Length: 212
Image (cartoon, rainbow, N blue to C red; front, side, top):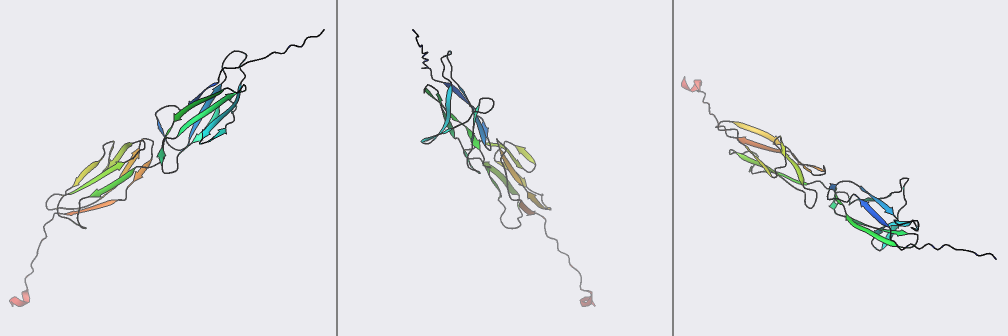
């Protein structure tokens, strides 16, 4: 008499996984999220069947690379910033699912808003002129450096005064730039300041013909 034996393997342990990067760092451009997936347990673990990224009501399945890792690109619109999040569903062969996440990424693809202005009224003025620069990065990574009059540091806003002193004339052109924490750069249109504190001179030439 022959007896057939069938081995039944039961896997009730859900898989595990991670998403990287998983930190509070601002980044720029397209960020590649790297996902690991593992089906832990004894020899009865059934193995990973599917890894997918949740996108609204859909779940886009990913394919493992040569290292057994899963990758997906995350970005925000060009010229924008934001904090998109990723949630991954990992399912093993036995049908046990696990959601990993959400993991929030901080992406800044937007240059700061930069203002360069002066209190000069008219093309020329005869009083000292204040020139100021200010930058705003909105909800992005923040201002790392503001440059005005060859001074570059995090101080924001910056102000400098143009004063040639009594009896002098000056015409000076200013440029300004601002860089956020991930390197997005903004530059301002050059601003020219003209201050004339010189007293006009008058010369009188005798009319020799009238004297004769």
